[in-house]
Length: 130
Image 1 (cartoon, rainbow, N blue to C red):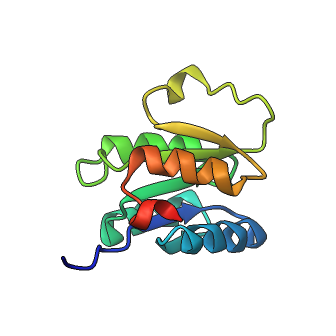
Image 2: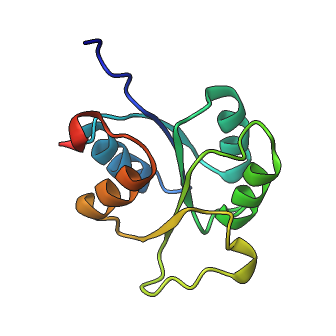
Image 3: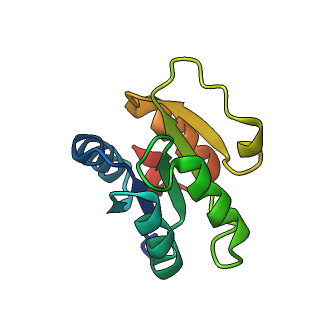
């Protein structure tokens, strides 16, 4: 039986601390991670890196997470990549225009078990993400 390929996750956030924290969680789940500091860079990286899933911060300068998700869904090369939106709101109420753009929402600070469950529902995690 061959070794399973590690899923590649693209994470876009304008906070270096959040990127570092999420990267550590993703590595613990057996995933590889590439990071983007903003939505524009996330769009470029999604096209070139072809990640298995994308984590988007809702609030970023220039292109926010909603605009980035809309652009990803409009691009034939990225339209089918699962997207998790990360939001600082305790009760995320996604704007109507975001419905259908993202697969799920997670509230920051993101808990390991929440990330594992949400990501595991979208992609196959190595070894069940243990």
